[in-house]
Image (tube, rainbow, N blue to C red; front, side):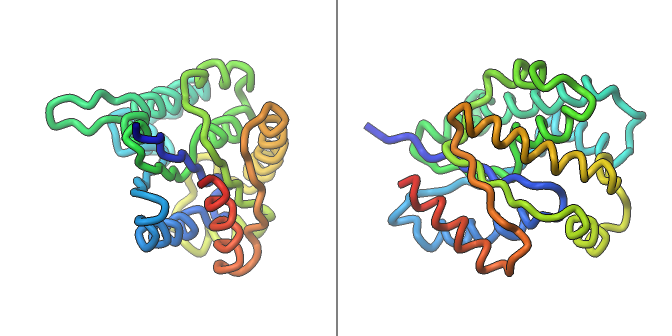
Length: 214
């Protein structure tokens, strides 16, 4: 009988270092696949049909959408990502991979939806529309001050996306912390890591948290 793979999520405000740390984690899993097994790396929003619409909305290439519509789009993209049928030449969703024993690492998941969208949408409703989403085995939240997030964003972006105004990011960061603690109290395995330190030190903490799953 094949054991399920581990489902790991990295979270944080824009500029917190998720992309960098995910890349390091990918190299680490590749180098240690004989110990920890195969790993599949993905992100939200996805490159799927619903994810493509979300990306256009985030880049402000669509007319403004009501935040409830955005929330439903994110939830739909997430469920499609998880449960896409494994038929013909179509690759099955993340649940199919996990059932085959493949570890899955996602750059963002439902904690992002809760943190970003509960600014304007009721959190209970957000949790309700995401109730069929799998709970991660581990969520790693990279915490950095908003001024550091803004500086990193300005260094790497030539335009401002939806949700990236500084005052909005302050509220999002506060939401992340409050909701992460709420989910921790409900039994979810969420670890908060100081993302302001050097890249290797942060990654060392991430590695330790991941290794404890196995």
